[in-house]
Figure 1 (tube, rainbow, N blue to C red):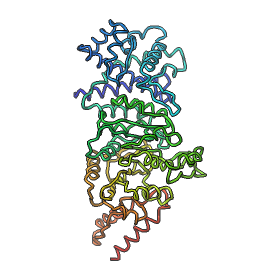
Figure 2 (cartoon, rainbow, N blue to C red; figure 1 turned 180 degrees about the vertical axis):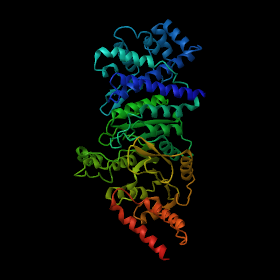
Figure 3 (tube, rainbow, N blue to C red; figure 1 turned 180 degrees about the horizontal axis):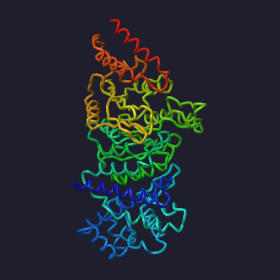
Length: 540
């Protein structure tokens, strides 16, 4: 069996075992389960990483030799070795290694031993691994884990069960397959903790292939170095991790903000696993819209899959105030009276991204497909701004059900200056394969789909019923409609003697019009324009 595949199987088994332990102690599907799983997994990872670095530094042959040697050294000698460790590696003290905890499992008050070990590691590495809130507080890497078991008599047994499961496959030094390995493992680890129906602030989950497609298009053929990458609604960091991987983790710095402490915790874990520890200090837990933490900096690349709707009625007055006017140039959406949670706050994120982007920067933003054809005031102001400033680079209409946790059809806007004032509109609604995921259908992009989409964008290539190049002037003349189907030429060659042929042609016409159909029937004006044009072609 391939070594990497074997490690993957063992690592997923480890995660399953940890989840089983939580379930056995009454914490299955508990709100704190994800904290326990993530903390245990990261503890295992940083111990393995530490031993790997120390083994190499001392010229020893194995981790077990290293552990034996460390037990012989004084605290001062260990501290001297720590000064030679790379910046992103945790510093561990005596008694804090996994094997040392494992050897003491049968001692009384073992839960207290584990909790104090975690707290010491977090405190010693506070400057490296802690995340700040907008108020300046520090969220440490670890916290006591036994506290989540309410029955104190069961805490020792709980910690013994966890520690006994952590002795398994090493998680460091995976070589060239590192990102692909950990993106798969991370997705597996959090799959039960990052699915909140698509309506919870900052917890949309972006599929890996969609995130990678966005990153590949955004970076293109550029050879980037020392670039600042930002996501104002980062969630667990899938978009940022894929972007960093395409650029090269040593060539970029990551910045983010997110209201959800859970998502921020998961993002930090993602940074640790992907050798981006140096960027943890740029991660902020807080409300990007009301208390933006990074407005003093402009970014080279921005990616975002913002929440589409949320009740922000309590903050609307503040968001509309003078202090935010420069950021929210197109305005603040109204709060629906009967359904406050329907407030379209994604429009605020688009404006915030434009405000945060360098003049020569590039961005990719996931939006509801309805934005492409909307004639509402704020949407029109944003689209007009993109067109008038020559910052609209492309549109990618995605297949239905590409995001399993939201039924909303989505598209991706690519922002950046175009040399020839041409915009590429791509209709990928027919791409992907559909499969059942629980009770829901989900569409998955294949590798061929991903490569086709990326190459079409990078080559700015037109393809019948798939992609079309449109001038900014034409978009303006069509009322800022950005739907690809609006610009495809419809050819009518109906073979009247063939019912099957007629059906095929009619299906083609329907596909062209589908891009204009959205959740709100209010977009009928644009649809009528297409139908009138179609009528004229039929008459001719």
